[in-house]
Image (spheres, each protein chain N blue to C red):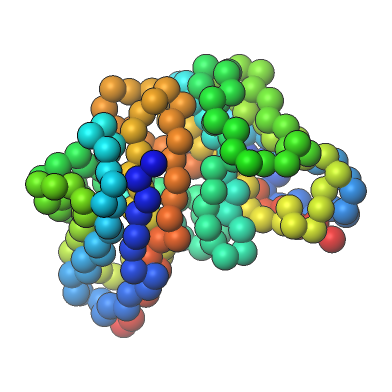
Length: 111
Length: 114
């Protein structure tokens, strides 16, 4: 299983763009990269998923270089409500697959 | 409509008791999970069921026994509760796919053992 490494915490200000990078050096060919967001007292929530290059949705962008050994979650113009823990997850679907969450990155957005 | 619902949300019980947490998903998914999040906020997988079959059983004490009566339900029964079992337990589900998948989590069940 590909282990992920993320910064433990990050601080930002409202309106800034935040980039959180995740390292996954031993990612396998069939692995997808998924990011989740967790607010206090809630379950993790899907943000974005990608396999290679760039993926964008209404919430974030995900940049994946050609070697796929890292990925960067980009949150445009964060607000106070984006304060949460962000998890990078690398997993494949093996029919009941095993998903390992790392420690996550605690993002704190200040006014 | 709640996609993944688990009950109870809060549970305070004494050491040695037996308790159950129920989980139901209405997403039509074929895979369900139980995760444990401890005080340090690490989210660890405990069990995974695919089409009612146990697929993943991490290093979890035998006191924890999952039961999946059908694809939409995965309950967690815990015997002889210990102080160290205090944590948040998340139920989750996903659909088997040839491409990447998305895991949908419930709101969590806060278990406190006193």
